[in-house]
Image (tube, rainbow, N blue to C red; front, side, top):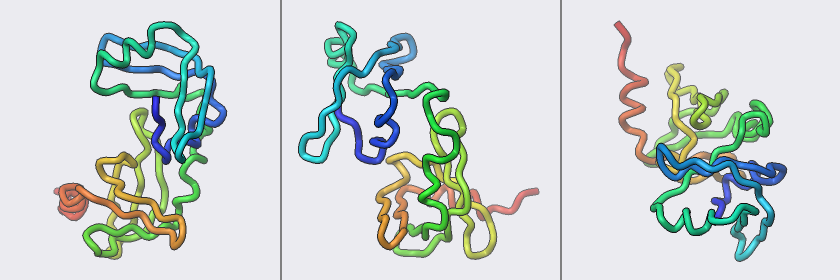
Amino acid sequence: MLVKPRFRAFFEDVTSVFLIFNSHRVFYVTICERKVKDQKILVRFAEDGIEAERRLHKETIVAIDPVDMEEDETLDYLLGYKVIFAEQDLGEVRDYFHNNAQYVLEIEMPDGSELLVPFVDHYVQAVLEDPGVIALENVQDLIDLALTPTK
């Protein structure tokens, strides 16, 4: 199984993960081998039948037991990063949290309002460590929601 680059840090010390194939197919598996090939991490599992099961499904979700994750230190390096969307400055990452599904970035916009953006591929186009910029995509609806006055 291929691990996307931005999730590598999660896999460095983890020995077991949940593989979720659909709502009724979940396996708790042990990582027996990690290999880097062409700047990609490949992971192999100790249990029999996992590769055959994976081929039956279009997508596999990997979940890490929250106990195995360091609490609220994973995305600390993003604090203070400038955030852009459609070549416009959206603001700066002030904080983040985990909502039991994914991390969510708290972005302070220039007008002081707060924009919440899930830290997932659908919204995060790129993270540029130097110069400390996060490029977003598909966030117009989230921006509109953040700027809508509450009643």
